[in-house]
Image (tube, rainbow, N blue to C red; front, top):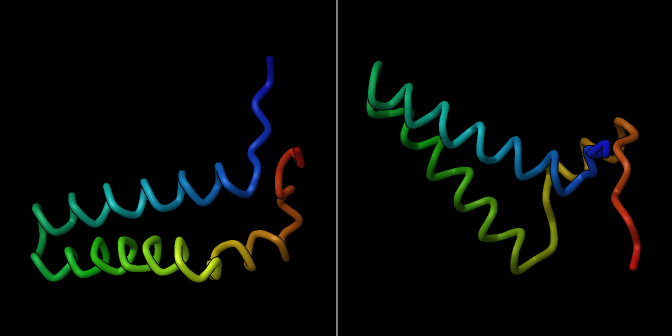
Length: 70
């Protein structure tokens, strides 16, 4: 079974990676990197209410499939 990386999966992977990297950088280098964690969280929250996600637009321009329509 192959897993197709749909837009939703790319967004989740990018957000998760961004949070983990910014937490590591904040812990190891400088606490200001925690602001990136806050930015990712705020962006996820606003996209839940507005439906607007900048990464979604970027991925659409790159030709990433939106996923299965039910």
